[in-house]
Structures are given as structure tokens and as C-alpha cells.
Image 1 (cartoon, helix red, strand yellow):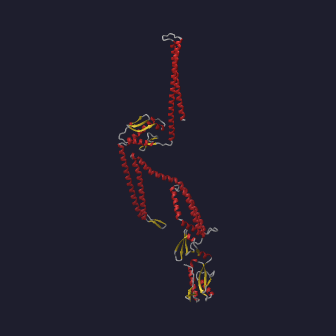
Image 2: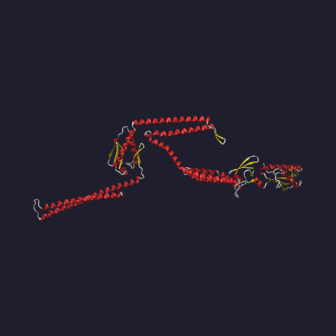
Image 3: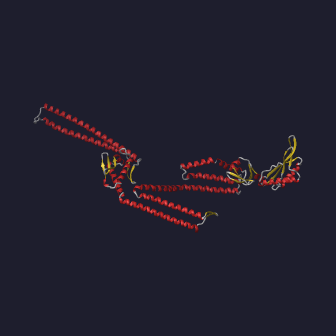
Length: 615
């Protein structure tokens, strides 16, 4: 729109100038015709007023016509020159206008993205500079202007009326005495949509007022007042520190008196967690911490006040104050913004908590057999509850994780990945034992209290955990076995057989053929029935295992109900066998013939009794 308006103005000016030139030509022609007519009349007469002859008149008219023709050609040439000058002037004016218009458009496009560089003097922003000049950028010009104003403001004698304007051909200088404060150019004026003089007149009172303010601030009496205020603040701070130390000394003496009179030990369920001496020391440490915290706060707020007294350090005071206030504001803002996430975490936690409580109640009912589920054993209740509880808590952590502060941080995520990698690399055996523990639970090979045998280890199960199983042997030794080892080993459960069908204990002895086998059977059965812990029903029985050349192998089998007493019952059985055979006059050895150096000898061999290892 501005471009169209400018073109209309240029065309109008051109039309007006051309009309003016045409008017001048017409006026000149009119004057020429008037002169020509008067000249013809005068020429028709002689010099003395006589009438010329026709030939002379024709000759005079021809000369006059030639003169008129020459003058007319001269006028046409002048018209052409005037037109060419007008066109050149119009073209130059149009080019300058278009150039200025392009500069304005460029400035308008840059105005939104160019903030400008402020001229700052002692924390006060006077104005902004947007353009460069003479190889100096806008930032350099702003800094130079600021330094010049500060330099002038720190001089001993200052005169506000010494600031004036010096008009040059292409720029205007704002002067103070013989010093140039800054120069205002056409580009500066274009940025502010005004002309050089108006912009310079706008800047000059701003600079002059700032110089006047600096004069007042740097006066002798103001400096004396600032020094006195500085000393006063230090004295007040000293008195505050003395007063705080006095109060906390009184508080410490009061705590020591309370130790003797009113301070009691901290007891939690008959356990003395803290006695009066330790409790007194903790209270004194807390009071000292509060004292140091208050002194630190006093120091933090006093230092900015001291720096703000002098104009030279006022900016530093503001920076220190912001260093203190900004972290506090950031923490408070983070806490306020985190409150909705905290509510979400609390809701998730309470939901999972009450679900776990409900599952714990159901597990207890199944474990006590008040609630029976077909195919689900009571001893599965506790491990199943632990598995489900673990999965629920893992699910809860996965849901809460995005709401934790810093969860979106790359550092937090990197630490989480690192911890997970360490756990995965170092817990392979732990995980295998953990999984084996649950496999053992659901396979039900034994339970706590059972008398079992794992490879060469025999004893009672005293603990079943997700990772290990602990067995107390018949020698009262506590053996810890990893669950993964149990799943890959042969396990014998004596208690399970004894509870349901009765456990058979047995032993083998050899007897020569001279003793009747029926007599041996009867003695073995009688010895078994005489043993405490051996069941009468089913009755003991004897198996003949082998017919050797010189003896017979007999095996006595007897039922017992209590697997825990198996070692004692086995020992009593062996004792009774010896007693019964001795009473019957039968020696417990078998003849064994062997040949050595072509000589046949008979050596007595003791009975081979394979007793079960027991307690």
C-alpha cells in the first residue's frame, strides 16, 4: 500500500512539472508572437515611417520569418533539454524513493526478529541501537555509547546543558563538550520510522538526564551516606549474629537441664532405643544445625543488601539475590507442579495395597484349609501369594515410574539401564535358584520338617526359601543347599512314605547253611517285633537275597511310622537281632573258604549288616 501511494505521488509530481514546462513554452511563444506582430508592423514602415515597397516588404518579411524560425527551433531545443532534465530528475527521485522504500521494507521484516542492543548505564537501559556504522556492529556501538556516558558521568564536574547536537551532512552527533557520545544515522532514523533530527532530539534529553543522575549519585555527600549505610548494615548484622548465638546458648543450657529433670529415654516396645544422654546429644546437634541455618540465611540476605548500596556493585547484588531466589523458586515450583503426580502415585499405591491385603486373606484361608480349591494344595498358598504379590509390586513400579521426578531425564534413564545391566549380569545364579525354589514348591518333593536325603546329606528340612533349602543333619549340622542343586539331584523323602504307607527299614545278614532258614526267619521277625517303633501291622517279613557257596543272605524288613526316629529304630533293631541270635546259640558269622599258596583255609567272616545311616 505504501508503494502504490509513493508511485501516485511521483506521477503527480512529474505531471505537475511537465505542465509547468508546457505553460512556460506557451508563455514564451505568446510573447514571441506579440513581439513578432509588433515587429511586422514596424517593419512595414521604413525607418523614417515611410511605406516600403512590396519587394522590400517581402524581403523584410522573409528575414523576419527566418529569425522566427530560428527562435522557434531554439525553443524546441530548450524544450527537449528541459524534458531530458525533468526525466533524469524524476528517475533519480524515483530511484531514491524506491531504495528508501526497500530499506523500510527490509527493516520492517527484520524488526520482529532483531531485538536490538541496549545502551545500559549502571543497570538502566536508555535506548536500543539496531544498525551498524563505519565497520562497527550495533553491539559495538551500544557498548561504546554506554562506556562514553559512564566515563562522562564519573567526571568530577558535570553540566547537563553541555549536551548538544552537531549536524553533519550524513549524520548528527550528540556531543558533550568536545566529546562525541554517539552518532545518529539515516538507518537509525529508519528503524524508528522518523528522521535524523527528531531521533537525535529524542536521545539527547535521555542522555542528559542520565548524566545529571550520575552527577547526583557520585556527589561527595552521597558517597559519605553510602559508606555510613554500609557500616550500619554490618553493625546490625553483627548484633543479629550475637543475639542468635545468645538465644541458642540459652536453648542448649535448657536442653541440658531437661536431661536431668524431664527428658525420658525413647522406648519402643520394651526396647530402649535412645537413652537420655544420646537423646540430649541429638537435640543439641539439631539446635546447632538450626542455628547455622539461620546464620546462613542472615548472611545470604545481608550480602545483596551490602552490594546494592553502591551503584557500581548494584548489578552484582541483583545477581547474588537471583542466585538465591531462583533455586528456591524452582524447587517450590517443581513441588507445586509435582502435587498431581503425587496424588496419582498415592492412588496407585493404595489400590495395589488393598489388592495385596485381599489376596493375603484368601491365601490364609486356603493355607488353614478353610477354603478348599480342587487341585490346589494348601502348601501352595503362601508361595503363590508371594509370586502374585511380587508381580503386583512390579506392575505398581512400572505404573509409578513415569510419574517419578526426573524419570524423563536422560541421566536417570541411563542409571536405570546401568543398574539393570549389572543386576542381569550378576544375578544369573540367583535367578536360577529363585526359579528353582518355585519349581520345588509346586513339585512338592518335601516340606518343612520332612526327613529327607539329598545326595549324601540326610536330615530334617528346617527352612525352605525361594533361593536355598536348609537341612539339619542327624549330627545336628546345618547344611545350606541351593535350590538349583536340589532340582538336579536325587531327593529321597522318608517322611512322605512314612505318613501315607509306612516306611520300611531293612538290614542284611549272612548265615551258613548249617542253620535252618526257617529258624533264621523266625529269629529276625521276633527281633523286629521286639523293637520299639516297628509296626505290628503290616508285620515284618524276611527276604532271601542270594545263595552263595558257603552262606545265605537274609534281609529283614520292618514297617515304621515315624521317619524322624528311623536311625534310633534301626539301632534298636540291630541290637535285638544280636540278642535273639545269641540267646538261640547261633553265632553271627558265616564260614568262608579261600585258597592261598595251594593251601585251603577256613576264615571266619563277620556278618555283613548294611545299616541305613541314621541319627
